[in-house]
Length: 63
Image (cartoon, one colour):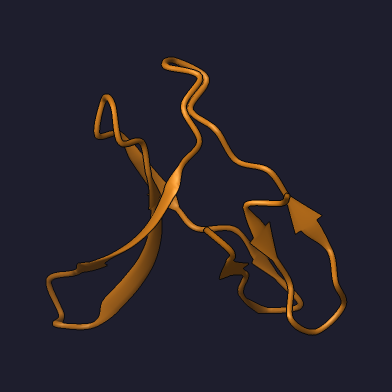
């Protein structure tokens, strides 16, 4: 099962931490201007990246 999927075109990706080999989990953070940003976090080392985008929008998380 894919980790993230584009609701517009169906493109899908699997995302895992290269350091820990753990599947990334979906999350949100609040940035300095007060807006929320969707992120992908490693549950083991707590590293995070901006969640993947496709067709100009954040891909939806299926797990």
